[in-house]
Length: 430
Image (cartoon, rainbow, N blue to C red; front, side, top):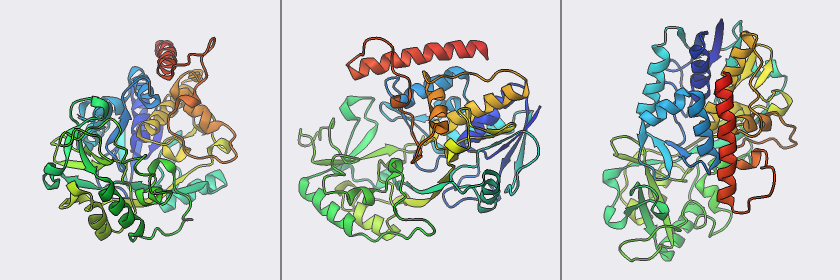
């Protein structure tokens, strides 16, 4: 069986791997390194653009459960993430370059995988998975519009700045993980009330870079620029990305008024990203305003924050719960309306497995809404008057039968146990 996979991001890479594992010949189309989107810079596959965090690793968190589901099914993305892991407390974060290199090497070295470099402008013949992402090239985006008969929707996405460790003033910062989870994995940059208010006033007044071509109000909550969030009220950041709860400044023995956390971004521990500080401020303004946080007064930026266009399909009118558009044609990744690195890879896993089952005459797996893998597909395929991208959340899964468990942590643990039991049954059937 020969299959086309268009796009070697997280979704396309995972979809290709699932097909390759089952003996399919895969033509993997990727326009890098011949052509890059405004947000991509690395030549390898599965590039992490917005952050190096894959979020929580706990089973009592929906994305943590999703990662475990994928591990048990046999995920390339999870294997490579484990090999590239860097410290991040109770979360999973990776060295971007090591992670991308691992995914790239696994696919390029597979004897059944042919990598076709260059921009795709028209749908190739044969069974295909389209996983070109939210920054699909203009030419292929037009091909998708012609295919689907509608333009879908659009929104903005933003990436946080990255600073060098040596430029952080550690006399004004301290290492700790929130609530003591993990080893001292984060660098915490505290602010007093006066420092926070001065920073806030500067942020609100700072000059932003224009983003052309789309309405200014379509900003996805999951990547909200920090200045847009701040505009909602003076205390919004103090209760959001700058919340100090679970942290004690060892210099004072007290919880600071506000704290910016820096998370390790590379294996060497020389680069750190500003957690929750996605932004569209102009570059000089980023240096000036973020420099008002005492520990970042002399910060050197390895990458400034950027903002770019994202697009996604009106999937409830186009796709089924396995991400199939029509026989022999699937979509996968963030363009389907799943939001997040792991969710994108998970959709690629489901699409790849489902297309293989179609081609081999097997019934498609019933993931059910008792697993996160299945619940995400059902969300994407369900009628929704105002369809928006969705992260993995327990709210998508079927509720537990019987008497309600009132303690949330215990309830989520029970949901996770049910999910993994179902995943075990599915793995035995694959």
